[in-house]
Image (cartoon, rainbow, N blue to C red; front, side):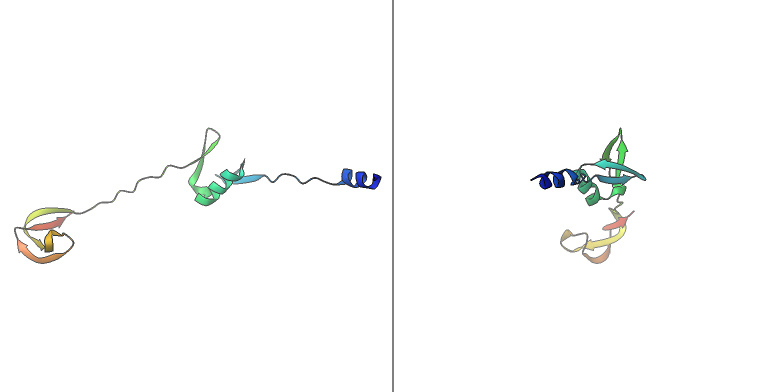
Amino acid sequence: MTKFWEALSSHKQKEKVKHTVTIDQVQYEVSLEKKLEVIRHGEENYMIVNSEIIKKPRQAKLIKHSLLKRADTGYKFFDNDPHWIESPTEGKYTWQK
C-alpha cells in the first residue's frame, strides 16, 4: 500500500487550460464561453473598453436609391410596377438620382 501513496504523491496534476484571445496585439485570459464567442465573430470585431472585451459597434451602410419622379419624357409601367417598363412615353415617370 505504501507504493500506492508514493506513486500518488509523485503524480503531477494537470494544469487548467488557460483560454486566451488576442485583441489589438495583446493577449487576454478569458472564459471558454467568451473565447468561443470571439472566435465565432472574429478577433478583429472586438475591442477593449474599461478592461472589458466588447464587440465593436457595426456601422450602418448607407444605400442610395434612385428616385422615381415625374418628367416630360418617361416610362409607362406594366401594372404600375416600377421594375417592369412597358414603353417610353411623354408625361410619365423617370428615374433620377
